[in-house]
Amino acid sequence: MALDGPLGDWTVYELPEDYRRGEVWGQAHRWFGFHVLRDDVHPVCDGVEFSSWKWMTVDELVDGVVEFRRRSYDEVLRGR
Figure (cartoon, helix red, strand yellow):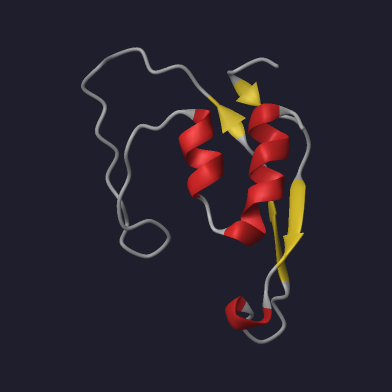
């Protein structure tokens, strides 16, 4: 899998009942990879979609994500 540009197709999952809002019962994501060319990259979080960030290995990310998203993360990042 190339690590720059789109990473496969769209991935879709259903949200558990506790996470649903109105008519929104699921989410679709399209992943993109990129290469960081400098070591002083510090993304700024918007406080809405993201409240913090950190560099992680693929294993740390997939294993640490909320359970209902794990299968799609695993599919995109590990190809399983």
